[in-house]
Length: 243
Image (cartoon, rainbow, N blue to C red; front, side, top):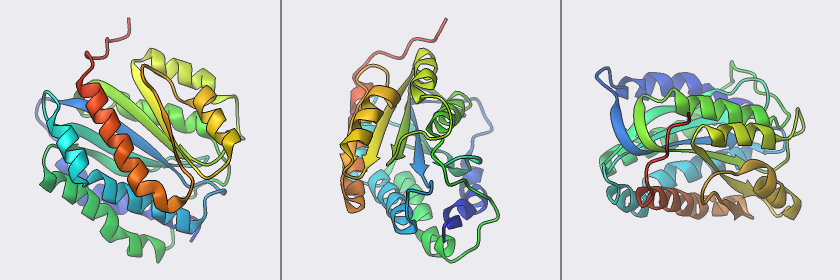
């Protein structure tokens, strides 16, 4: 059960990887990468709730309305799992510009959950919370995205502080200097963790932290986060390229 979510790496890449475009890069209003915490402090039930929340939030009508408000009416979307060690891609890059595309992404996540939880993973995820490395990995995903974006956002979900390396604020500053905004969702009641994410993790213009005090609240919180990010960035000038 502990490592089961990582098996979706293989399933997802086969199921939806064909959506990548071989032609010239497509432009989006925003590219969004979300990192889901599967470290030792996250129980299997909470892992499933994170995945459920992502699946339901991305196909929300409110999120679709926000996407349509953008200049291009489409976003790039990807998800990865993090703890320490491997950072497997959970959902490879997908273009979302219609309710059908949003539903396909959400359905692909939701329908795989029984398979994932009943399977044995072939990929080993660590037990520790290597937030710094996870943030750096998410930034690399954004820089290598197949879509050209006016804005780039890294979302980090978690319930604990980095207990592997240096403070994530040093990585945060480097990422923000690349024109990437970092937002976060803290799972749980720990105010110390909430403060830590505000001071050490998030960064960039209008960056924010949301809190899901109970795992069951993640659907609403993720929906609100995606809507805020998409609408906010649709109203802002394009992020300038770093010198």
